[in-house]
Image (cartoon, rainbow, N blue to C red; front, side):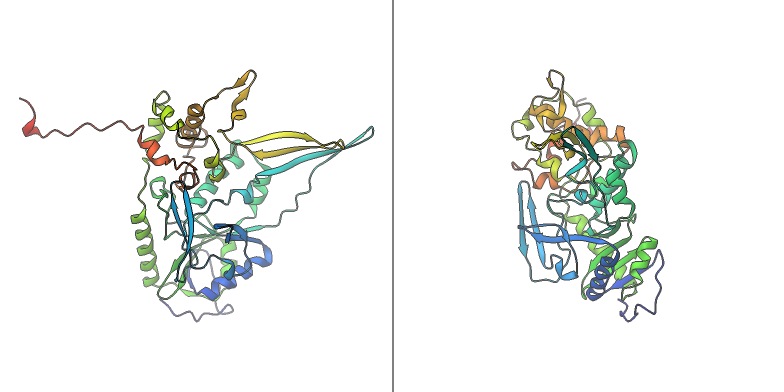
Length: 389
């Protein structure tokens, strides 16, 4: 690794540069971002790694690791120096751009007078630090939804000025399957700064992917990346890929599900499914919402948009009752939309393989195992010498 002697005044960074930044330099970057952005990043709160305000590097979950299994999540403290030694937490970055609840407008009634008020949106530019590759992929999916077929003004405003510092994943959880969905553990770009945490010594390989990223990186003490830094990155990503034990047939699953609408397995999985909607609430790409008008005793009314879920009984309610009254139909709607009909709507899968739906399912339903249940058994291989004449 090159010795980090370059100072902020001595170097101008451009798009395409690859830098080596020491932990102190990473702290400089967070401080620099706070000048122009509302900086959000991973913090430990209530026994989980969630999104919170990030002022300095010491706010990060240093030496904290997660242990995830179907229906189980725990944090453990290590004796190492890792800042990003965890996979994903229960909260994705989606709420930062697509609020769980939002007032669209409100009215104030006083006597015979009625006044309509549009809430003032004074959004400061947002910087997200520590975004995993799977969540970068999820952001692209939401862009197809909210900047395309279903425009969302709040998302569009937040996304326009969003600064993304992505960190590649070296410690995937046992529930992750990002590689088979083409969403990790490495990252090709499409962010402002792409970071890989390296060790011996502790340092960060930072790839500059945008003009804004170059401007921020220019304020940080750094050196140029060397061949050993790149080799360390490749080794870390290879190790992460080997740790991924779950997978999904990315190319064939959409067609398979389209042909399995009447498969008996829908009833089998529904016997375990609680229809609690946890999977949709933690999913970084689910986007269903509901709009309701609420009136208080003073005569004021507000129109409020809130997240919804296809597991809610009212979600498919039309005149006469819900279209999907039972758990088998609701689970089928979620799974087939996520992995099959999403392609018809948006030209991609709705899943990025983050594994949150597996970890945060109270009964531990494993979506990769459920998808495998629809795969017909392969025909046994017959040795030509043993074949009947």
